[in-house]
Image (tube, rainbow, N blue to C red; front, side):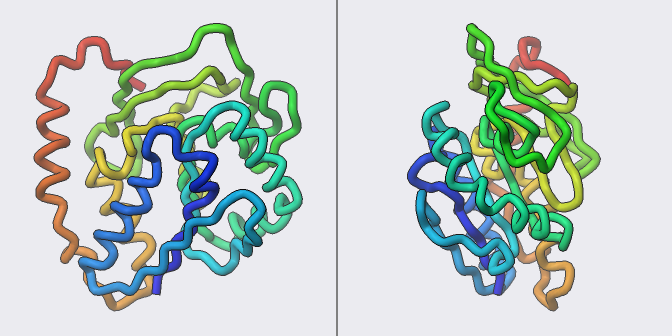
Length: 217
């Protein structure tokens, strides 16, 4: 059984990021794998070791700080989860939780970057490159924070962090497939049974539109 934790479903789901959990669970079940999807909210007891993957989305700055306050006591446990090969997908401004600080407030410190807020919001379509897949990764950004590092998609161990929303997995079927294959690496389930036909058609349609204003990274 694959266990998925949707972290802060009540606070950090501003742009429908829970769609990432739904897409992942749906396609895992297509392979015949059993899936348990738990929607965890502020104040819920959380044991990272109980889950194969944790997924966390974007929210308002106020809600982000609430989530950070709730996660700080779990800092060491989350670091151990990362070191032990646990999977985490953070999209939107939730990636700011995992750096050294968020707008001068201490953060979880799992990654060597800081997030600083600016006056103007960053609102744009994006088209990214990653070693995970051979296609571009497409999506959307809407956030005030900027990181003091250049990567738009951060991959370390099994943690994947990006400002990109969309939701990310719904819009990028090859990325979903890559993640499912990693999660099923020690299983006898066949990941090729997952059918991404509709998502791939939507992806190709998006890629065929005028992309001259999309930021390449």
